[in-house]
Length: 120
Image (cartoon, rainbow, N blue to C red; front, side, top):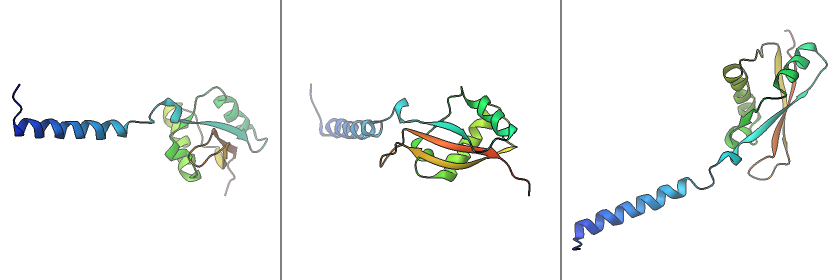
């Protein structure tokens, strides 16, 4: 096989692109999701109803949405509740977000305290 300069440069370029793109996918997998657990923050009926409706759901967050950013976490969970699970969240609010067993880069799970919305 005769290898011209042009063929060599094409193959070298493809090799660099392949190596660079392969490194983008390292560490990806289902284990990178962070599970969410809900905790009742008050004894209100609407809170109890929500906790019972979500106890068997598999609510997961991407680490970027879950880790150390409570507002993003609450927004993402609210979207999942209404869009994917069709659960009415109009009567509740996500109060506190706690990162359980957290390391520098991840948490074992996110715990969200749920309570009834106060009327203004």
